[in-house]
Amino acid sequence: MTLPNKLTIGRILAVPAMVTVACIPYLRDTNMFTIDGVGYLTIANFINFILFILASFTDFLDGKIARKYNLVTTFGKFADPLADKMLVLTSFLILMTQGLTVRGWPSELGITPLWAVAIILIRELMVSGIRLVAAQKGIVIAAGWAGKVKTFVTMVALAFVFLATIHISIAIIALILVYASVILTVYSGVVYFINAKDMLLESV
Image (cartoon, rainbow, N blue to C red):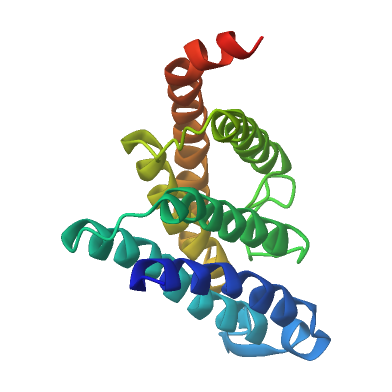
């Protein structure tokens, strides 16, 4: 197994680790630290922030190594975007179920709005469906530039969301990045569909 593929598998394994951390009551309900009795960061979010950053870094690293040393494989083309989807969607779900609160932040606004997560989930399901059709035809569709930019922005957004409870300024940046992520998600999904439409029409 090539090093890039090992890194991809490592990113996939980070997902159940993050879920486990989020499900441990002590880690979820105990603060790592507090700031002036207002800002705070739970132990669970601190650990998952570290795991998320490390997993996200492998996304950059595996692609760079694969291209530099000509280690691009069919498995990598399929598993790399799958690992990204698992990491991103799981992180959103973890953060949504925590009921994060930020001093001075409107509770009805939310840091990870349900509609935003729904759009991202629908896009990923659509792309996965297209990939499945392509796989049945023996075609492996690698991630395009729009999808890669979307993934990068989404990962940066999630990193800020994990830290959003520390201060309202971080929460504002997080929400702006989440909105940007949604826009890129829709755009990259449309581009993906347009590029695959001929193949899909042949399957009808």
